[in-house]
Length: 404
Figure 1 (tube, helix red, strand yellow):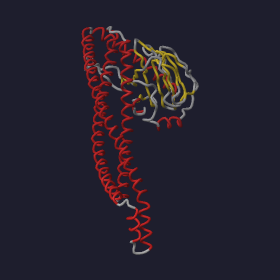
Figure 2 (cartoon, rainbow, N blue to C red; figure 1 turned 60 degrees about the vertical axis):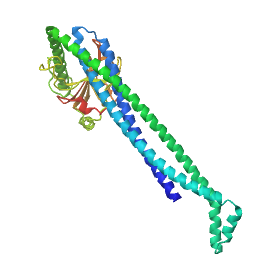
Figure 3 (cartoon, rainbow, N blue to C red; figure 1 turned 90 degrees about the vertical axis):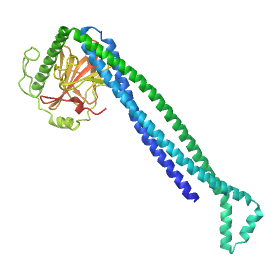
Figure 4 (spheres, helix red, strand yellow; figure 1 turned 180 degrees about the vertical axis):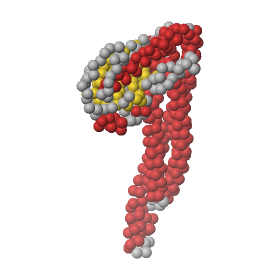
């Protein structure tokens, strides 16, 4: 019976340890995601403050605020999941503590009766008579062995009970901490909800502001369209040249001379392709513009220029890194995008725009994760514009980069 009870307690403790380990791992992942969202919101806050409230920058400000609203909503949703997880953990721990307490009560009662019995028969004469009353020598030795080990076994079992009590107290302390964490998280969620409402109000105010000056707003959109078109033409020209095709002289307004053809490294291309969904991010920050067709935030029926890449809001002067091994094919300067670096990976290409300081030059070999420069701040915005191309076809970068 004593051995069975000891095994049962060991099983319960092992189960609790496993449960706590799994909860701890899940909590770390949630804390990491919350930290990332909070960092992104801080970056967006800084850029929103840097952009003036003039009409010329109102659209950019609206984009940033709406992204911050999305990040705040995700943060609130993450808080809801965290609170649900904490409530579940609290409920499970309360049940475990109840079961452990019941087993401990049973063991304590059993050993209390055992000690009481030993106390009543503590007279040495009684013990001697118990041995002498044996039917044979073998039984006498067994009785002697039992009496000799009784005290030792009682001490061992008593130590087990004490250890179990200590563990139980620790579990109760952990339960109290879980409840405290849950309450703090609820308070934080309420604060985030208040900020979210204020940010949504700011977004609507900007929409109303932009609607008042439709002509100026359309001029800004037209300028942006020209910058996007010029960038796309230049990228296509460079890629055509890299793929050993006839280059166009219309891209940058200059006549270009075709360089000697270089064979395409298809082995490198296959390695690049095999890493789809696993490439490191070129920078840390919030994605404020996604790949694909977008519509105007003020006039929903108005199409914006098709986005061949993504834009990542970053801290000022942050480093930009190559997403894979390759060769710097070209460095160009484009209106609205400042310095741009094109890296070739066989018949794949990665393109990094809105850079300030560039630390590589044409023809350099770069490796995965190597810094190629820093981001620039243009009109109050500190953002990296990033693209990935497969041959002459633009790709959605977020399907190539590893999940966050």
